Structures are given as C-alpha cells and as structure tokens.
Image (tube, rainbow, N blue to C red; front, side, top):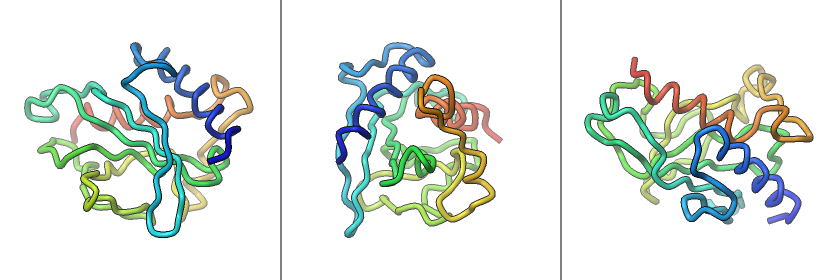
Length: 156
C-alpha cells in the first residue's frame, strides 16, 4: 500500500474519532491493513465495536465493521461498509450479499450493508462523492460511517 494513502486514512480516522468518539489512529478499535481479493489489492479499515441501535439489530449493541477502500481512494468512495456477521435487522439495506460491483466477502465472514456515498460502477452516484485535500473539509471515512449508521440505526 502506498504510504501516502495510509497517512491520509490515518488522518481520516482522526476525523472519524471526533465524529463518533473513542476512535483514534492509535486506538486498538481501528485497524488498517491490506486486503487481497483475487488479484486486486485494497486497503481495509476495521472498526471494532461500532455502536448500533439494538432495536434495529434485535438486541445487538455493536458490530465489527469493515470499510473497503478501492485502489484509487480517495478519488472514489469506499465500497460501502461490511459487518462481521449476518445480523437480523430491521433495515432493508442489510442485504448481506454484495451488489453494484463490490466484492463479495461472505466466505470471509463479512456481510455487505448496502449503503455508502457512491459506487464504482454508477458514475451518477460516484459524482456525489466530494473528497477534499483536508479530510475534515470534504467526504471521508467519517462521512461514510455516519451515512451507514443513519441507515443501520433507522430501520426501514
């Protein structure tokens, strides 16, 4: 992985920490690492104990989440958010299987939550993604997590 991308992601984690509290670049709740799927390399960000509404997750209070960043991140948004296991939920966004061209990680124990800011194969949605040189001034990991948490915690 390019060191510049890793440094950017670390600065975005600082923004994420401010938004949802308790997460920081040195926190053991956030892990950054390479993910290889087939022949494609991604940068993955794992968030431990991401709080969710137990009413929407039938008693579950937190999930382990994965943000999968495409090789050209931040020019394009993360590939949505995955959670560590199949949960019974009230939201129809949690379809479990991947669509819209994102990798299917069910065999690795990750289930896709169909929510994000844009998509690699939908240019009209990708155009909604507005990153900035300073992650605090544009879309970033905190933007994606906040949008996903609204959908996760609202139910449908």
